[in-house]
Image 1 (cartoon, rainbow, N blue to C red):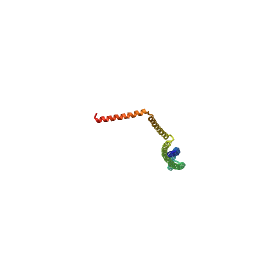
Image 2 (spheres, rainbow, N blue to C red):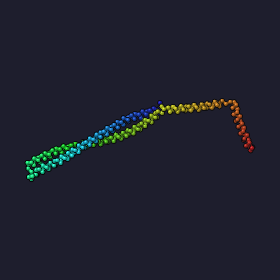
Image 3 (cartoon, helix red, strand yellow):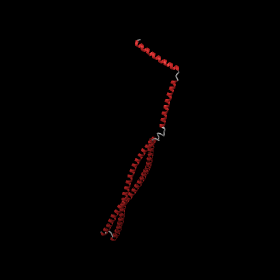
Image 4 (tube, helix red, strand yellow):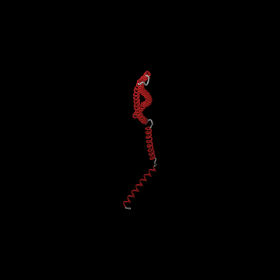
Length: 232
């Protein structure tokens, strides 16, 4: 094997290794992106649920605050009515006491709702931060995946070229060219040999006639020159 073939084999091997090393990260990255998108969907769903609970808690807080104000006003109205003689004082005290109990219940509800709203706000903030991080990771991994796929294409093209170059000798192209050169040289030598044989196979008569033809041609040329000089 020539040094070039060895180099091509080495290049081919490295290209194979590079492609093998790239294929797994590509598949892993694609799976990672799918997993992240699944996490993102779950996080968005959780965020929507928490926001919905916050909306309900906030509505309950608003309702409780209204009840606190409303029952306090009612208790005060009852006491004022008793003071003005519009109703029995004992009955006014009893109803005002019940109204104040409602105020106490509403305050408890308001306090609980306020705590829930604060808790949900914290959860929403954390979920939104996680969602933004997941989105950022998805974008990052998608860009890395594009880079890996581009490298994969280059590696496959390099592997193909190296494979073709490494197989130059194995295809027998050089060997066939050498055989063709030998065949042409053989045919040229054979043609020359046949020419020598043809030359050596002339008869004595052929040689004599050839020599006389040459002499006659020389005599004719000399006669023509003489006539030219004489002006004839």
